[in-house]
Length: 379
Ligand SMILES: Cc1cc2nc3c(=O)[nH]c(=O)nc-3n(C[C@H](O)[C@H](O)[C@H](O)COP(=O)(O)OP(=O)(O)OC[C@H]3O[C@@H](n4cnc5c(N)ncnc54)[C@H](O)[C@@H]3O)c2cc1C
Image (cartoon, rainbow, N blue to C red; front, side, top):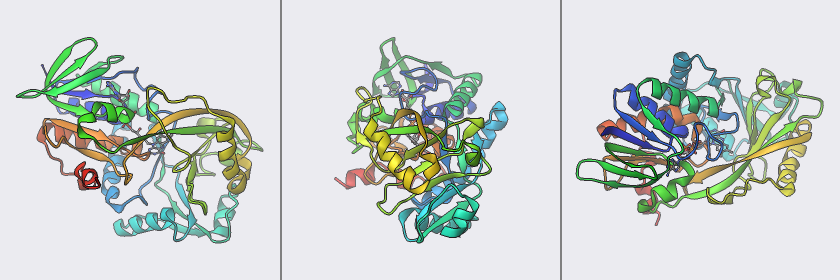
């Protein structure tokens, strides 16, 4: 008998297992793949982290706690997990990206600078911004390393006593009078509480909730910039998101760890509905050409040799806000799903929230925005 079973040990589940084990709970973690694998949503070297949050100011308190917890995990493990190299949110002043980032920064008193297009070009010569373009620069933005940090959460959870099983898929779960029963191909387990954090498999493992989730296929591209990566070194270029006139936001990172490649991807464009069991992992010429057309226009030197690409999945809710809650019918079950392509930076704090929900059925963190009932209300 365990106190808590965690189903899915990716970004969110590995963190939940760590926090629960840290509170002295007897934890069983079940993961269908290997540790820190590349078949879900938490791989590809880097994930943007930022505080001025255009999606909604309600995320800011969670971000502040997420930063503290990433730092704590770095201290505990000695690993380099988060790099604060600064961040640029670039686009029209009235666009969703810049205006939303400014609004959340103002509401929470976060420091930032606004650069007009000539100042942006002067300080960061890789860009070719149009005349109406502005940029919000935030010093405390940067990136988190997904594979290393999933591994860090898993390793710490194990050292704190968690029992983690890999390549053991959860086939089903059901409430019992006092707790939960979980079936895998290898056995049946019982616990008082269950945390379900299945990423792109949420439509399957949380099918009873009928959440309106759409899984999309996303691509990460690596290019070798023309003229080399020197102008793309951390310190010269921060992370950035660019909102062009057509709204197809795309983003990139500095050349990390001295690499001769730079990663770029679309944030909200070109994501095709998919299924984690049948996703097409091959990247096609027309997809490479599509991102190239944006790089060529706005960051011309990044439109160099294409080297390789990886596929990944978003699990989107209709309003692009997360689902984090106790199960509406079974309070002994907590759920974390629908991270809509912007969840990674929050893994550290989502694990803490899930540990609160699994142990107390409530959390002091502000999670009203993430209630599944708002999605049911949308019909
Ligand atoms: C291309 C791309 C770029 C992104 N960029 C950013 C970014 O810059 N910043 C940011 O904050 N976020 C970003 N995100 C989003 C972020 O990565 C995700 O929100 C986050 O990784 C989701 O974590 P998760 O735990 O829900 O999913 P995952 O990490 O995929 O974990 C789910 C786990 O559950 C396991 N599982 C599923 N079903 C079962 C089962 N039945 N039994 C056992 N195990 C099971 C899976 O194998 C998997 O390991 C990006 C996502 C993608 C795809």
